[in-house]
Length: 130
Image 1: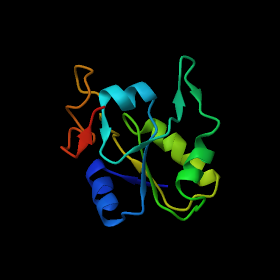
Image 2: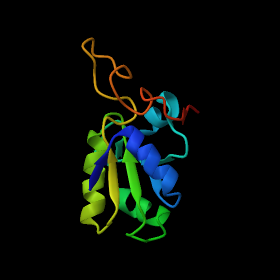
Image 3: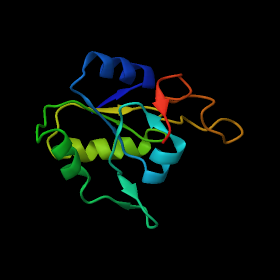
């Protein structure tokens, strides 16, 4: 698995239109916090018990057309969940998996707020909210 900054990930996606951008956050985060333009939502873990989605790899395989060569770029809030999800894809045989470091909202600042230090939104990359 390779790790990219948000800007590197955006540039990669622009130059590789066949790549999938998968947002692995919870459905609530995806819908109400916002998400990168073009991101497809497949939760790594969600729900009241925050359990790992047992169908995650299968859902991504389906989106990838069952091709493990298709590039998959993963993003979450801060880069941690997407890294775990990426490890599961690599274990399942995916060859081109990328984790977006700092995620959509970035690291916490000194006041424990996000979006002020790093992340997709902080970097001014295209995003939308449902």
